[in-house]
Image 1 (cartoon, rainbow, N blue to C red):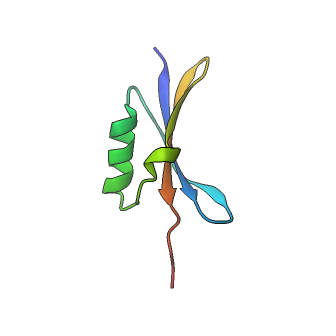
Image 2: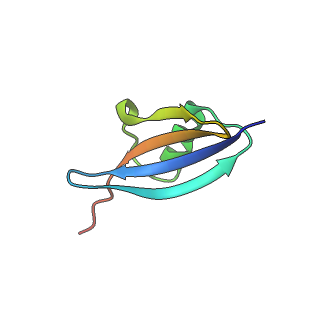
Length: 69
C-alpha cells in the first residue's frame, strides 16, 4: 500500500516555499485542503494537485503566503 505525502506549499508573488510536510496512510485532496484550512491557511484551489509516484502519492496544497506586519 502506498503512503501519502501531504505538503502545504506557500505561494507568494516572488517565491514558493514548503510550510509543512506530513505522511499518512490515506488522504484525499479535499481532506488535505481541509487540514490546511483548519491550520489557518488560505488555500489556492487551482494550484493544488495530486502527483502519484512509484512508492508514494504526493498531495500538494498551495496556500497563500502569510503576511507579517
